[in-house]
Length: 308
Image (cartoon, rainbow, N blue to C red):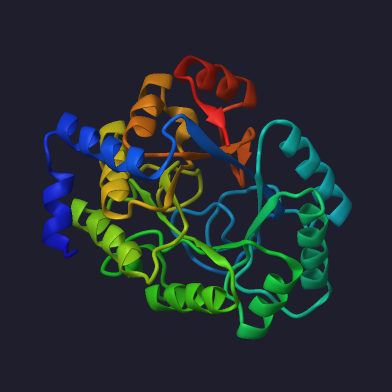
């Protein structure tokens, strides 16, 4: 599929687009099931990268609370609680540029093994990895490696300058070769053009195979970042992006991620109708707010959705 074909899908009349996405979704998934993950911020702040949207960068003036790496016991206890609330996957997020071969990495490997003992899936987002590090993560039982491409390759240098779009693709390939599934998506609402969103979808679709899990985030403007005043996205943009993603990449899970707490139940229902079938549970996503578990359970009951 090329960019023009994806553009034609994106620009379909809204109801027709959602209807086509629903048909594709039903052909590949149970429409009444959602996969639920929980995201644990195992190390917060102090990242040397200059991502314009991120409050954890030392280049931005966000004044977030910085904490060192959590202990394996703390993470295990949070995973147990998440499992009780219906999560089937735990995602471990650490704010740094890359994994270093030190005691922190050994601790993360222990975290992975402890969560696997609960019969849960484990994903991590740890920055850049070497082939040897990726093999060690895979050997510990890590199921998914998350490394979002965030936006189009054409727009990437407007968002981040301390690494390249190709660096992201190379990291994903290293994780894939080590035997892990890929989790990679992006953010809409960073001032990008519609063409940038479509180019991002094309990049994900062009991976062989595409990522197993694709988070779609709506920017939450964070105080102290260059994007703190950005307001360029709507629920209609989000639904169109999800529906197009579902049609173009039919067999991947599409996760309705950051920005969900700003949507009404009706807005989220449209996202699920358009093909989203995965969410994060819990009141915090790294440094941003998320919908509460009680609100999620109420919404799932209204919509007749069950956690997979």
